[in-house]
Amino acid sequence: MPWRPVGEWVSVVQHPWVFSHVGFLSFPVVRESRNHRVVSESQGGLKMNRKYLILAAFAASVLLCHPAPGFANSILGSAQSFAVLGASTVTNTGPTTLWGDLGLYSGTSITGGPPLITFTGGTIHQTDAVAQQAQADALIAYNTLAALSPSTTLSGTVGTQTLFAGVYDFTGGAALLTGALTLDAQGNPNAQFVFKTASTLITSSGAVVNVINAGSGAGVYWQVGSSATLGTGTVFAGNIIADQSITLNTAAEILCGRAIALHAAVTMDTNTLSNDNTEYNAGTGRSDFGSYGFSGGGQDTTVAVPEPITLSGLFLGVGTLCGYVRRRARR
Image 1 (spheres, rainbow, N blue to C red):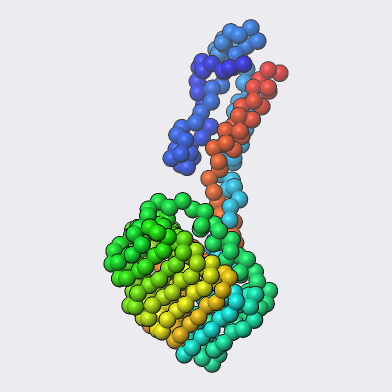
Image 2 (cartoon, one colour):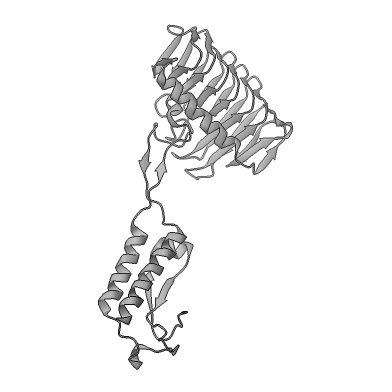
């Protein structure tokens, strides 16, 4: 039967998160009698043992303060440890420097590896279980990004401009970067930038992507429907996940991020790539703000983090406690 609030209301929640999300919660210490008359404590209709109110308040506080399990890890999964990850082949011409792993799966040919490739950090995973798992995780990340609804549609040609966090796609499905693109996180340490192309991503010679005012949880992702090509001397930032191939022309740099090709080749020519600018930025001074290559921070880790309890769980718990108190009061 319905409760009618007669008499005193007793607070069961004074938790900051609840104030910010659902306001002030309380419940009455009165009930309706069997003959539907509303009675109060002063009328003798309800004899509530004080210890049960204390128990209810304590249990509700535990319900709110106990963290629901959550998991904070990069969308890239095990692919996060790679600077370059190819599918069919990886080819390099000229002296290239990598910070991060170099991987290939399911192809078997890496051409122009060490000594042409210098590893300042990382190792090679050539057609092994590590590269196989990284490809599987990268595909999941690609599909996750592809499923996001864009908040803004940009013209196919992006010149010198500043963009803020959001999900972007491009008119005509292809993207051409021609100038200096600045991604401004506006002081949000967890700002996420996602760029989705239905076909190609191409940068002109000397194009630049800069990230500013970000933090350790920042992410920059380029989900490319076919192939990506970085023009000569491009200085790029973010994680390219291309359905097909990725080509880095002479002296193109990815500082900071990754080149991941899901079904075709990665081709390099005298390039520099780092998936962690905190450790290695090639002396450029460019920062990834501790985000581990704009991939959300933390190197390939999964950790439990506190999360506010859901409203449904909150109300279910409080409702159960109230029912318990009512049953005890009837005895």
